[in-house]
Image (cartoon, rainbow, N blue to C red):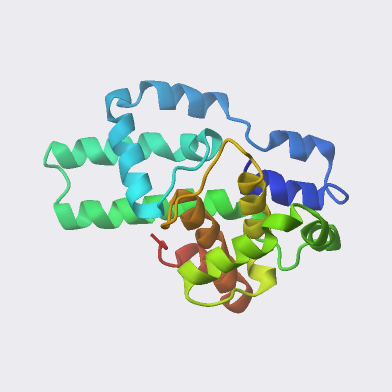
Length: 200
C-alpha cells in the first residue's frame, strides 16, 4: 500500500483509468540506468535515503533518482566532491525523491470520497492512529493535512501480520513526512513545500 495508491482512489472519478495504471510504473531508460550505474552502491544510497527521509519509498519512486545519488557517492569517495558540498547535494537530491513520493497528494482539496472513506474505513484503528501521530508530532494535525496519512496507517495496523513498535518507526515517519509536506503546501504553496526541510 502506498500514499499514491490511496490518493489515486480518491481521484478515480475525475482521472482516466490510463493515468491510474501509470502509478508505480517504471520507464525503461530508468530501469536500464538503475541496473548499470554503480550497482555496488545501492545499499549505501538506500542507507542515505533512510537517514534523510526515515523510510525507503517504493522502487518506482526511487528509480529515476537513485543512479544520480549513487554517482554522487562515487564522486565523493573518489575525492571529487568535498564533504560539505556532498551533504548539500545529497539533501537536495533526496528532497526530489520525497517530492516525487508526495506528488499524488499535492491537490489543494481531496475529493469528498476520501473523507467518507475516513469516516467508514478501519474505524477501530482511527483513534489509535490519530493519537499516535499527535504524540510524535507534538500537536493534533488538521485533518486536511493528515487524512491520507491516517488512512494509510489504519490500513497497515489492520494487517495482523504487522506490529508497530512502541517507539517511533519508519511507518510513523513516512506518515508525518506527508503531513508536514501538506501543511506547508496548503499554507505556503507548492514551491515552499518542495523546498521544505526533510522531516527526519
